Every structure is written in structure tokens, then in C-alpha cells.
Length: 321
Ligand code: MEV
Image 1: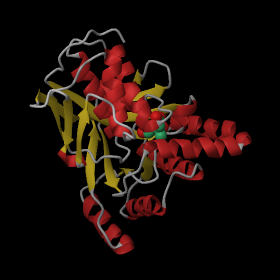
Image 2: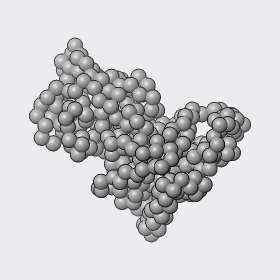
Image 3: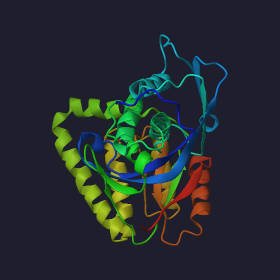
Image 4: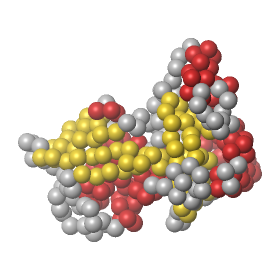
């Protein structure tokens, strides 16, 4: 990164994301399908009285850090990510307060860490920055959160849209003839993506003969999924989502609560449901029935009956383009 020392920009936006299929496999070179949650995070920058400190506050994430210009011992993951990002950009963020506005839940598989890193990169490099530079800089921070990040979350956070993403390649934008209506259910269980990524890595390391057939199955399902989305074959798409959930379960990244939420979604008439993102907690992505008027009520009833609680859930529409 060659940017000269410069003040931070005043405002930056970044998108959240949902992965429709291919998470984890994408770390190993397979393709994944993902869509953005538009402008899910806004960061605003203002002066701070203390010229030797950077303050970052995102109330919805209960996040508040005061970071000194001089590094301290035992800094947490978030502080390390922020420090590395600004160091790499050769930007002095001291004497600034950064405040974030978002409704994305943190640590839930909806791309909160990538959105934060992309928005920080935009503050650091300014409004005229080149997209490749922004991506590279955001990945410095994102790799601290994800360990071995494929880059899918950062691409979505930066560029948005509905894409087929393969690590190291330019993402292919997909165009829908009809809007795609989805629901997201939060399991209210935050987790670290890096832990889930290393869990999968260790399983594949211990059983190396399983790797190639597992990734081939992911690739084939994602291929079918793409075809079903583009041809609006919702029943097939739902079935692919179900298979993706089962495959992700074999990798060890589902949980009893995620499985139960998928079951509730099916009981409420959903065509498909799967965990989305790294798993281990986080969210379930649901394809509702084609006429979803009563879906939300039916879902609430199913959760109440089976799980004795109604978990937060909200619709997400991927627009035609
Ligand atoms: C996390 O949103 C997606 C993973 O595939 C990790 C990554 O691709 O960086 C689990």
C-alpha cells in the first residue's frame, strides 16, 4: 500500500452479506453464491479531544474501543485488526472518534467483520480510492477475524450485488429476472468465524481422502443452485439449500439450534433452509413458500412450539437486476 499519511474521510458505507451456498468450500477454491445486505453499516468520523487515541464505537454491537497510538501487550483481535489496517494504509487515525450505525447482528455470519474492515479501509483511503486497493486493505483486517479468509465477505461488503465468487478471481455478477424473497433467522449465538474455519481445516487435515469428494459435491450443488436461482426454480433451490445444510453439518459447523431452526422453517412451509456463513451459531437462511403471506406467523408458531422461544427473524429481498 503506498498511500501517504492523510486525514480520515468523514463517512463510509459497507454492505453485509448472506451466503446462499458454498461457504467453507470457497476457502479451498470452490465457487460460492452470495448476496449483499445493502449499506448495512455506516461509519462516521469526528475529532476526539485526545490526540493520542482512536475511539471506535458501534452501539448495536456493544462495541467500544479506545485504542492508544502506542501498541499495548495482549491486544484483542479487533484492536489488532484495526491497528494493522491503519498501519498498512500509512494513515494516522489518532485524535479521531469513529461511530458506527448498523442493524446487522455482530458475529452472526452476515458479514459484520468484513463490513467493518471495508468501511474502515474507505475511511483510511478516502472517497477516490481504487477498489482493488480498498479490497486489499480490508483483507488485512478481515484475515485477523477469519484466519484464512477467502475474500468473499470483503468482496460483497465492497461491491454488493448477487455474485458467484471464486477465490482469487473477479466475481461474476448474476442478474435475476424476478426478485428472490428470503428470510433470515438469528440463532442468537455469536461465534468467531476463524474458529469455524480452523475446525473445518483440521477435519480435512485428519481425513484427507474426504476433501476432494466433499469439495466436488459442494461445487456441483452450487452449480445447480445457480441454475435454479437464474431460472426461478424455487423448489430445486430449496432442495439445494437443504443439501448444503446437510453438507455443512458433515463439516461439523452446524449446531442443534441451527438444525432446529431449519426444522421450524420447514414446518412453517419453507422450501429450503440452511445455515449461512461460517456456522457454529449465527444465522439460518430460509427460502419461504412462493405465497409467503402467513409465513412469518407460521414460523413464529413453529419456533414457539418446538424451541419454546421466538428467535429474531427478518425478510431479505434480492432485487431483480
Ligand atoms: C464466512 O462468511 C465464509 C467462510 O467461507 C470463510 C471465508 O470464506 O472467508 C466460512
